[in-house]
Length: 276
Length: 253
Image (tube, rainbow over all chains, first blue to last red; front, side, top):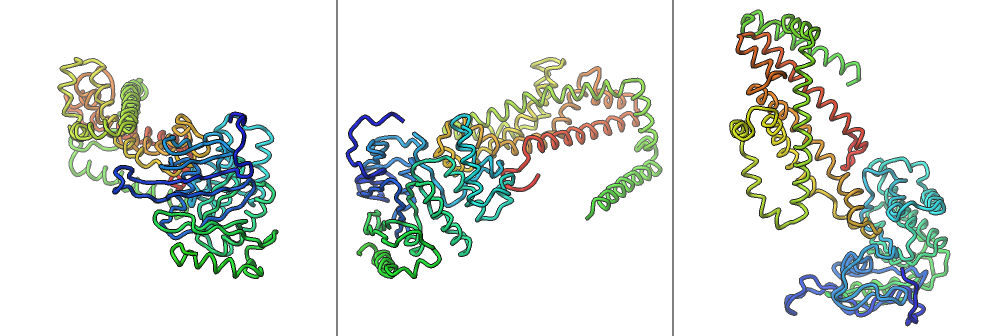
């Protein structure tokens, strides 16, 4: 990445989406199908933002745009004060190595062991430095896969594959991590464990996280802020700071005094199809 | 089934086969079905004069000389077509048509074009391998997981890295399967080539024995050809295990 020479307009926001719109079938205005429209969102460095929304409101599309696997049809994406994507700009996934993306599927390479999967993003940029290898080793340990690093993905359970996928993305060490319902398909216990692990990792790694979920409890337990997308095309209909002190325990988050208020606000918003 | 039981079953199967062969020989007479002993004796005698080795070596050389270009051209053509959807759509009907030509039917044409030397035989084997490997590679390229490609691109993988780390490992099992399917056909093609014109080779031995009314010689050729297919198939399987310790679909090989 080039050094920042321009004055940073929004000094506090690491990632900013401005009037972002995505439309499949671009063409005559009547035929255009907008999935997202006029989405404004600023995410601060080190912030954990949870993203919720009715189905079809474009949550995954939003992540794809930020990950640059999809070019936006309108608006722009600003990263660190620099426009990295927007209307008329081709999508360039992986440019600048700024974004890590943990998708719903673990997307591990089936022909590589856990360790080789974790190292995969690092080796793409050339020979990894000893410190990176050490970091990767520590992450594999932290997600509890030290004894499994020589195993192949098909030899692991779903939860372990998720852990491997998480370790791989964190070993890549991007400032921003996008997560698309990463724990959606897991049983409640594994899920609670992974949520706790994620919070611990986030606290030690200081990443900026954009986390999509359909579970209100999860959104409240993990996030500093919850953003709700609703409607078709999807727009931001609610942004709410989650003032529950950390460290938090995802399993007992409902005991927090302000939990009910957050829960009702989010649920009302999701049910009302966008009216808070 | 335990390992020992499996071995026992195999030995039993072999014994039944030998018994059936020997029975057929007794019942039909040695002109129709020569005895195992006669065929084995011929093989043993020829192993000592060196003729056996010469024949097997010649046919193996032909097989390799045809299979390698067939493999390269077949997989290369598949990649080329997959790179351009337009050319792929354009070429598809022709490929289906060309595929349905029985390759052995082309022998006279190949002889017209290339004479009776080494060339038409190699071409015949190559063509046989080419189409089978092509269709499997072409199908295999369609199964490359788009989600894996996307994940690798987000990690900053370029085109060459995507090919090396995602596409090649996804497609290799299909190429191997193609080779394994093509192998008996390629040996058949080699034999047909050698029937036509050859001074040495398993096919030449069979044809020569036929002209002399020597059924032991014909059987000896068939046994050799079968052994060649089995050996080559075993070699391919070993090579596959070496290159692909884990099958991309997640099963153990």
